[in-house]
Length: 478
Image 1 (cartoon, rainbow, N blue to C red):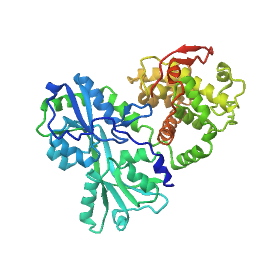
Image 2 (cartoon, rainbow, N blue to C red):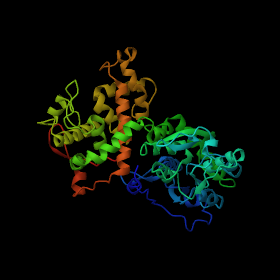
Image 3 (cartoon, rainbow, N blue to C red):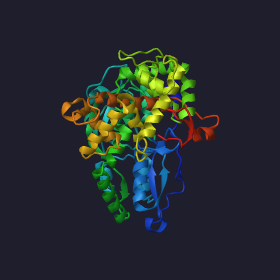
Image 4 (tube, rainbow, N blue to C red):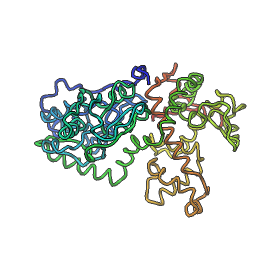
C-alpha cells in the first residue's frame, strides 16, 4: 500500500482539556460534581465519530457512568499512554478510562474496576512477506511497539529468553499509526493488542496476526490506590448492572462486532473500487444524503454491498440496479428506470430511510440503522419476526446485537413455523449488515464528510418515500 494512505487517514481530533495544568489534584467528586477522567484519543477509547460527536468504548461507558452518578463529566486526554497512569497517581483525575490492560505491575499500584473486555497481545506482520512462526523469528526484524503499553512490557519479558530481540518503543497514543507504517512496509513487525489489530485490519487488509504472546489480558478502568473508595464501589455496581442488563454486550458489539466478517479479498476489492468506481457515483450519493439525511458514506457502503457499484447488476430473482431494488420497491419509490444509477441511489436511500422511520421510535442509534439495513435485505416483516423471536428468548428486540443472534433461526422450521412471515435466510441479512458496517467504517476513514449547501433546510425537510411529499423531521445521527 502506498504512503499516500497515511495522508488520507482521518485525524482523531481531541476535544477536551489537554491536561496541561491538571497535575494538581482534582476536587473530590462530592464537592465538584464533575467526574474527571483521563483518557487517550484512539479508535479503541475515544474519538470524533462520523457525525462530529465523540464516540468510542470509553466515551460511552464513562458517559453512562456519569449519568448514573448524576454528575457532569470532563475528559482529559494525554498524548501518550505512558503519561496516563503517572497523572492518575498524581490525582489529576478521579479515574483513567484509556483501554488499560490489568498487568501485575499496574494492579500493584492502582485499583481497577471490573473488566469490560479481554484482549491478547499479538505479533502482527505484513502478508507481503513471510509469516514469522515463533519469537526467535523476530530477531533482526524492524519491530515497533507503543511506549508504556503492556505490549512493550511483554516484549521485555520475551527478551529475557531471547536476548538478541530488539525493538523500538514509540511515544504514541495507540498502535494505529504503527500498524499503518507496517502496512506500508516501513516496518517488519508490530506488537499490539488484538482489539486494536481487529479494527486496523479493516483498513489494512495486508496485515495479519502471526501469533499471540503472553496471556489473556483484561481491560478495565484504573483508580488511584488511595482514591475515593466509594467511587470505585459505585463503578463495581455499575459494571455489574450493565453486564446483567445487556448494555455492555451491546457496546462491545457496537465497536467490535463487525470486525471479523470481511476477509482480505473483500477489503482489497472494496479499496480498489473505492478509487476506481466510486468517483462516478459520489455526487449522487451526496445528493441522496441531502434528500434523506443519511450519511452518504453509509449509502455508498450499502450500494457496494448490494451491487459492487454496478448500475446494471441483476439477480436471478429480478432485483436490479446499483441499489438492487425489487420491482415492488422501485414502484413504491416512483423509479422509472432501475438501471439508472442516480435514480437507483436516490430511491435506495429513501427506502432505507423509510425502514428506519417504520421501526419503533424508542430504538436508538446505531441499532436503528443496523436493523434497517437488515430489513433492506430480508424485509421488514422478517425483521419483525426476528425481533419477536428475540423477545421470546428473553433478549432485547431493540438491540442489533441480540436480534442478529436470532436472525439465522428464521431458516429453521422449529422457529419460523411459529412466526407470521415464515422462512427467511436470516443469516444472509446478518452477514450483509455486518459487511455494511465494515464498508461504512472504511469510507468514514478515507472519505470526507459531506456538508450540505443548505444544511438548515436539509435538516428540516425530507421526502416521504411513499407519497413523494416533503415532511419535517430531525436529522438522524449514526
